[in-house]
Length: 202
Image 1 (cartoon, rainbow, N blue to C red):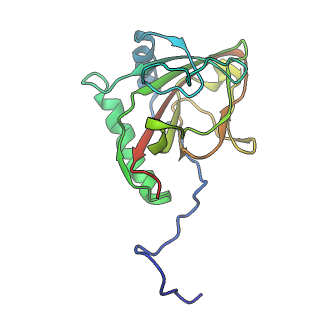
Image 2 (tube, rainbow, N blue to C red):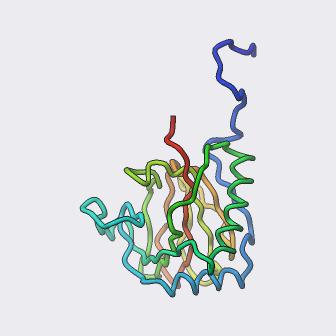
């Protein structure tokens, strides 16, 4: 195909703008236990639709038919620096290999999420939204406990494409992709969720 004169550098195509990267055993079992302890040490609360660690407002409504989970927030500090550094380095590598997004920061705390076996779930949604959520570029999900410990609880990308679960598995995908966690029917599913941001889409 001839190269058009109406282009903007750099001139390349992403491998797949709707691709999910899964890295097995990214965190060791011992590291997963440390992250669980960090999450359990923070105040736990019912998850709300549109959650971000911002002041609660009328747009953050509890809707258990759409989302049912318990969450806490893990901050960036000296105690958690090892976790954030390991994640940061992998996000940079995966973004360079797959999407080429303009990433600038991770300025939201990490979300420790617990889905209980009484139907804990989160229906199809995107991680983009209004305000602080509008500049999310890459969503990151980590499985913190062994899938043998729960039934259901599949991480699925639209349409119902299940991602490979595993203790310590890391999943990275663009924040504009529809995804969900199917109902947990037995046991407890624990995960870590965070986002890497950049400038406005343009």
